[in-house]
Length: 92
Image (cartoon, rainbow, N blue to C red; front, side, top):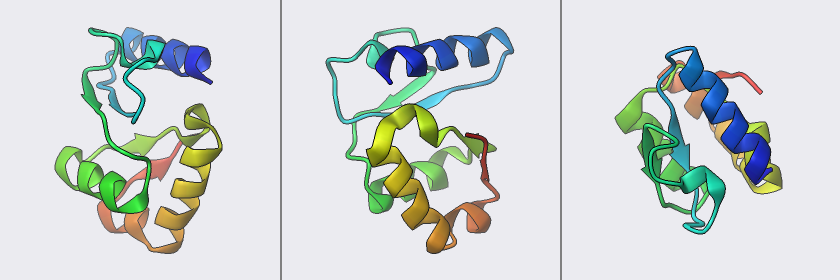
């Protein structure tokens, strides 16, 4: 999912969509300098992800590019009402 995630970031940027990446692994293509507009090196757990959502106010999230960990985190955030609270759409 590292390759597909980096390709998704490139596609979003081609459409002039600002990208914010949360990834705890500094040794991935996705976290390469200049790829995403902002990078947070944080664990993919609801508490940290909600902090980023609160700070960045994204219009949507692409969970599928973060593997099973991101999907699980997204399910927890959805159940807790975080996406609804901040008006975030799940795009994939």
